[in-house]
Image (tube, rainbow, N blue to C red; front, side, top):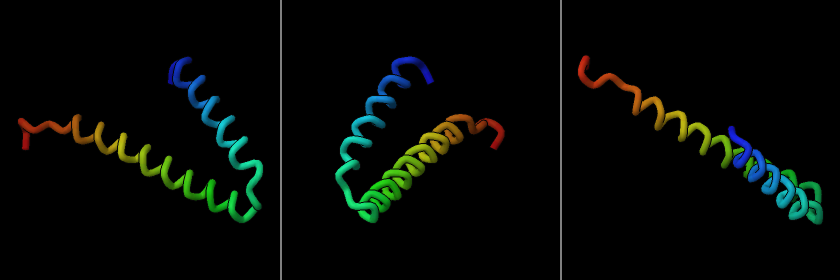
Length: 60
């Protein structure tokens, strides 16, 4: 990950921390759980796209 992406991630983390600071603990826990699920699903989707691009269609 490059500097641009690291700065963007830092900004997002800061915004999320500010947004969640006023939440009740159970609400914040659910918020972060859903955020984690979303992030994981998107990460997996990026890896699946890469695996599909790497297939050798000539030898199938």
